[in-house]
Image 1 (cartoon, rainbow, N blue to C red):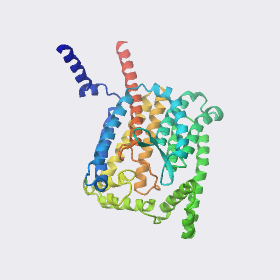
Image 2 (spheres, helix red, strand yellow):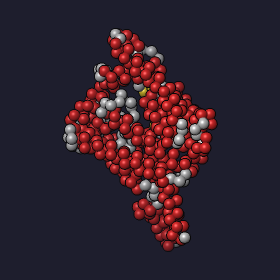
Image 3 (cartoon, rainbow, N blue to C red):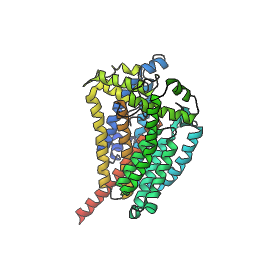
Image 4 (cartoon, helix red, strand yellow):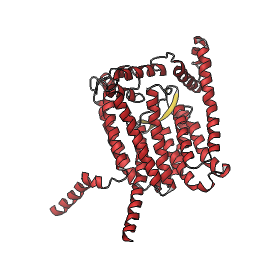
Length: 421
């Protein structure tokens, strides 16, 4: 009886043995290291950015948000680990089902979702009582489905009816469903998808035609911002009292207007946030004021989320900001290597598409912080405070590592055959 109990204990011990766990960890080791680096940066930045907020909301307990972030990071790493163990061909089989699931979820969110800032972006998950951005699921589903379509239609990809239309309609549908509540996410997603289509050998003429059509509403938005800036201030206030969709359009126009002209808005407005972000960057200088010494965090809305990059620059300077940018560039480079080494089209397109959306999201977040883009509301992947968006980002990285693991196994078998021969 004692011997049996000892055997079971040893089996359990081996299961949770760190060395045993690392031996099963495959894929690109550099990407694993980058994930660890970004999560460590996230812990430092979130703890610093939320210290005052936690003190105010939790009666002096400044570690509440830190513990929450630790929990999300641990959950995210487990998601990456288990997702990378799954053979990536499974994601091809699941792509159509997940895509078809995401479309009604987007429609439901549009009409019945949790509303914030005049927009409906979230649904409330039962039991755990958490909100989830359905656009995060839709992005993942779209790239899985798009990679599947591109891999299957390479023979007819130049044809407009047989190649282009089947791959562009899912992109158009998802972007149009996301846009009313989150225009910036829809635009970034559309740009990532068009880049993937270009690499997937879709006709350049068809891609340029799509870009031309997409630019029409953008030009209308810019024109409306210019016209509104010249209009009387009282007329603008009157316009802001209409329905939800009109209110969202008004928000888009206001953000473009504040970006072009630097107009002043309320404390939650884009101009105020951009102004505070500039102050944080100016205070940071080259090497920063030091960890935990940020003062702008008390005045900058979403300092722990959309504008966390400003806090990083304030505390670690331009050197720290450049280091974060370097990490994302290395991540993109390693994913491009996976794309070039992958022998199968689906895996190659899947890894590249997911890496594009993460890298473009990171660039957009950093560009907003330094006022190169209008305020968008997108997070900095793996660095901003955790939520369901953090988990979906980890799932995307796990899928990329799944492709990398398969590439390693394929190359290993080829080397074995060559050695035997």
